[in-house]
Amino acid sequence: MKSRSIYRSKPDHVAAAAEARAQRGVWVPAALYPARESAAGAAKRVRRAEGLRAYGPAGAFEAYVASHADGWALWVRWVAGDEPVPALPDAMTVRVTSRGDGPGYSGVGIITVTVAARCPQCGGPRGWDTVAPIRFPEDGEWYTADKWTNPCGHMDLYASVLREARTRPVPQPVAERPPAALPIAAPPAPGSPAGIVLAAAEERRGMHAAQAARLLHDLGMPEAAEVIRTEMAARKGHMSAKAAAHYLHAGGAR
Ligand SMILES: [Zn+2]
Image (cartoon, rainbow, N blue to C red; front, top):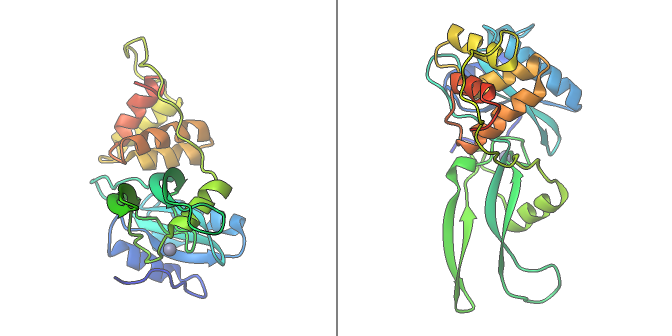
């Protein structure tokens, strides 16, 4: 597999955009920044194609920023077109082995942890969609843990994942609430988060919920964006912007 872990020394957005356009929906490393603010500013300009014409037109690319061993990485992907692309979850839950902290052999334990769905080395997406059980025998017992393959090529060791889960907790998804008591009668109000998303979805056929969340975030409605992202993760990325609008309109739970 081609390694995506090698960063260009200077941001070459033309090359990054071209690489991303060649593989729709695949995240590509675009640049590395020493400061998070610079990377976040660049991500915003990528989404809006402001000052970075390679990413035009506005909305053709998604972008996110994640910590990288050497700073802050900007990752981009090309999403223009009608077919939805799977959303990238923020976190993933996996079973890992734990062999105790002390010296000497103390047996094996299986611990379920939730960690960021980003590679700690390069900030690229972890192989959250490749998680599969692996069974192994030890001391005459059978155990089941999870394995996954990161597209960037970096390996996750169980010990590092355990450490990461202890030291860098990720936000837990909100608990499921009972369905909204009232059926949807009126359409969402224009200007409300649901109304904005619905209008955008009608403009753009095939708009994905991830893009709806991004839109709300950019419009200064991070809570509504988070509600969509949480539900989107629960649906494993299978959620259109229209479904997100209905979900918001129904009170963020159904
Ligand atoms: Zn990596």
